[in-house]
Length: 592
Image (cartoon, rainbow, N blue to C red; front, side):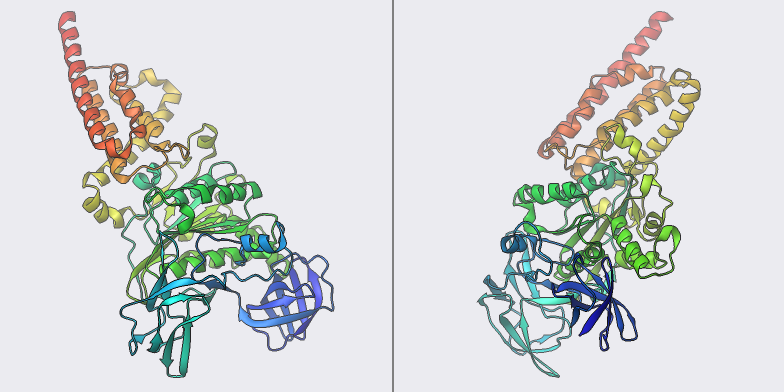
């Protein structure tokens, strides 16, 4: 127990704290505010408080809980909306009203609700178990089986285990260890600042399918991979991440609203419960965990929210699930670190950020990965972090620290956003380092033409950008027909393939199969138009064919019809170009 000596915003200095440890959770003042020890100086402890410190006075008591900041994990965590330190907002609303009262102490998981626990067939008396071993499951939602694992630090043989309806605190198994009997319940706690253990990290060779054409075809991210979305304000970072959360083929989604504007987080909280999973038709919230820490909430809790989210993601990964973590935005997280660092009077680094900013960013993204779990399964955590550099300046410290560690870079462009091109991912500035590792999966599951189509598309867009620079100098009429065709096909790809509506029920999600058919058709048209240009057909005649309108409407074709409709469009390309070339030949003969 200690006594408050000094208060500076969310930072409290307490004396007489001998025996306190780094990262211990404490209760501050008569209001019992939640805080965490972040620095020790002799008998003094520097504490960051996760709640508003207004009204707290020097001389009030500080009580240590002798535990690190941890999250509660167990059945009942899915479909929940938590704040940055995992307090359930729905339960707090029922208890205190729409405003969170300071010092509110509510269990993250309902202790009274009964769950039907099913013991695993292999989990019998005498069976050897170690931490991470799955001993049973609960049907938490129709989409997710919640597997119950042996908690950290427990190794031995099962002495007893039982199925039945139980609360999360009831004992489901007893394990005989070298130190005695350990009772195992469905509830466990994990410290948020320590990465969870796993057996082995394995190569990321399976793509995270997002349904967004510019990402899946040109700049894919692997399951267990890392991606950064930097961009200026209004360029569509939040909408892009929300689309990823809605339509990606991850089993579980953890969405962290870290310091975002209240209206944006309100949209998420009101929209997600009404969304349907595109694969199963079930409510999307049945496989989602939301963490809301808006910009008007205490700054220290913002710093904690990122760790809360990644720890929950690791928990579901350890069950063998593919988890997608959306962090929106890591710039707000870094700003919280900067504010705390300033109050600690630490030596500032570039732009006032603490010198350890790159280390913290790297440690966060390093917790992503595709792994072999302790139980022998395969799970992954894919981390997608938004970055909000002031003025879109990618040379600022947070963007640069992120770029050093992520392997996929989706650069949002304000000019594209202002021209209503969404998603506004710039195809010339973005990149993905996963394309080589994913090629085998594409060849096996989509077709060997997928990789060649992607490479040709990137080359086409690059060449179009070069030609547009020339056109600004000499005009389009000065170009030969073959290059004017290339400009037209590049425009076709940009407007009809890369541009996508997040609000159209058909266009919002495009399967890889449909993406390959769409881009293959456009490239086929380009080949025929270029061939016709070499035979003397003008670019205008080729780009005005009726089939161009059919190609522009391919995004509106439902998934189940794309094979048949795509085949018809390719037949039209062949027949219309054949007719066009023939007519041009007849005109040449008449002229002769």
